[in-house]
Length: 160
Image 1 (cartoon, rainbow, N blue to C red):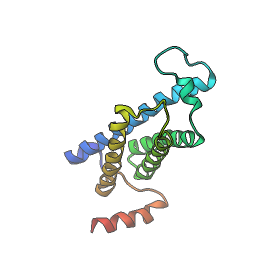
Image 2 (cartoon, helix red, strand yellow):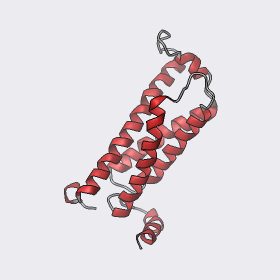
Image 3 (tube, rainbow, N blue to C red):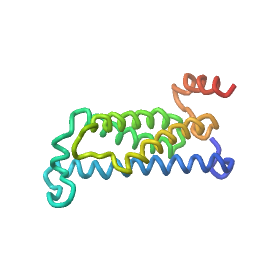
Image 4 (cartoon, rainbow, N blue to C red):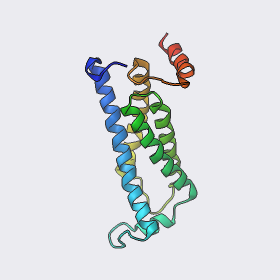
């Protein structure tokens, strides 16, 4: 694995962009996690424009499964991305699928309008998954351990 300083500029830019998008999506989710846990513990303030208590009462088990999967796998993807491991890609895809599950389960929820954050976050995350494919292809993210041979063969076929 080469150091960042020896990588071509375009690879450094894509790697940095991937880190920024991954961190941004994770921070967005962690912000909502603080609200969710605060409401469930009964310590979140009741005053304000947004009724977090009413919103939380409308959430289904699918929201919780998707939301917390997105957070756990997003954190795993970030750690793997920092360590420049190709397993960041499948971890990130699982985080993306968890977030999509949560958003689909929010369809029709009177307390969730999607907003601009949803409009920008999903396309950015989709673009990030594509960027990670390129990072794996270029060898910026490398496969290690027992999965190296299987996944390495798939990507070596794509290089031809």
